[in-house]
Structures are given as C-alpha cells and as structure tokens.
Image (cartoon, rainbow, N blue to C red; front, top):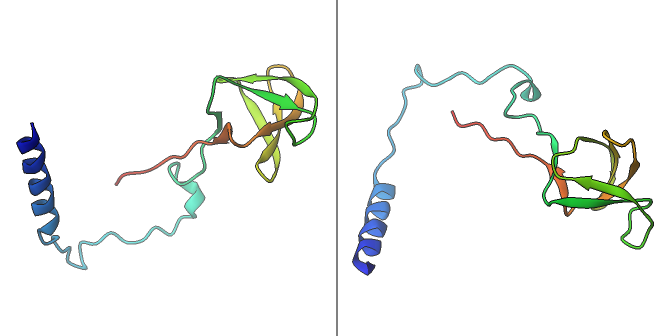
Length: 113
C-alpha cells in the first residue's frame, strides 16, 4: 500500500514538472466586455443555512430574545449585515430578526472554463 502512495506522488510531481503548452496570441480568448455580474458564475449565490436550524434573535447578540427558528431549506431575505450578524426576514413566517453569520452565508459559485 505504501509503494502505491509513493508511485502516485511521483507521478503527480512528474506531471507538475512538465512544461505548459503555450497558446498563440491569435487563438487566445478575448476578454469579456460584459459586466462581471452578468455571468451566472460570477454573481454571488443565494443565502443558505449551513446547519439544520438557526435561531432568529431580536438583536445581533446571542443573549437577546429568540423570535423564531430558521430551518435549513427555508427561504429568507437578508436586509443588512452588522459584524458577523445578518438581519433577515423568514419568507415562510414573516419573522424579522438577526441570525449569526457563522451559520448563514452566501453560496459560492465557481465556473470552470
């Protein structure tokens, strides 16, 4: 098993040492003149919950009153951000409050050309 790992490592190192093929200037793709936000992969994705549920609070602190719970998969709108807290509205219940940015974040999209 150990020999296989060393062999794979040597193959990877050998592949990295190969020279990169160069593209003639006539074949190189022209830079896009469209605004960067117009391509779907460059726009920030939707807000998502990174856990099963997060508590909606009245203020941007863990010591404030709990107003409700936002479950993974529920839709919500983020109005503003203060530090690591986001003021949201739960679209299912209409509850407006604050949730921790530790659990709520923007989905990251990536394009591979």
